[in-house]
Length: 65
Length: 249
Ligand SMILES: [Zn+2]
Image (cartoon, rainbow over the protein chains, first blue to last red):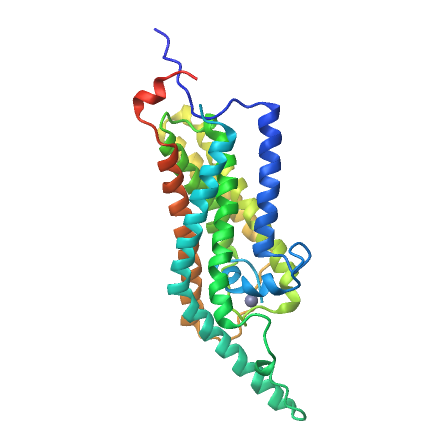
């Protein structure tokens, strides 16, 4: 008897899925960059966001000062 | 049927909560250490200006862009946004890798992936370059420290992959070989990278060792909190009853 077809609960791998995945990861890495490394170039807030998130950077283990 | 979008949104939401709760841990366990480190930093800076004589420039007297109170609130913004980013990336990883994770249980798959992520992204970098509180690092080397830190993340993920790959290959020789293969693949990759990567030791001899390690454990605890909650939270959102899993797509 063949094993019952089991759904794995995720969509099948397709080129559309891969494009969506790459776009999402790209945007999310940009967000992580904003928290961990940006010094105003992305946020366009000068050093304000950089300084605001300073303690978080240290406690999240990102190299700082 | 679960779409890419619904799997991603689960990760973003779980990540946000995991990040905010990790921020609470960091606030309680870490902020007093950061305050203490900044006090030492400012005392040293003051001493230096006095040594040089002449005009007394007190760094502390400059109006900072964000006050210490503001930075303590900003901590939650930082951990919350990190949680969203990590949760989203985790969800994409889960979606793409679910078929490769050899378990019929979606919750176990999510937990295994979170354990792998924590090991590769947090633990491997932590052991090579333990994080430092304010005032310890040399500002001149921040680029080197950033590049090596990011490299340790890539290497950590590679090491986990190597461990899994070797363990699956060795499984044909039995259970002991499977375990030994997994450990060997991971440890050899990490050890080789640790040897090749440069040593960085910028902690001044005068910096209190107890405070240094209290800060480091607060940092590790913050990230462990985030990943534990992300793993269990995501597992809870994808968990299905066994009966549901038999239903075909
Ligand atoms: Zn700093």
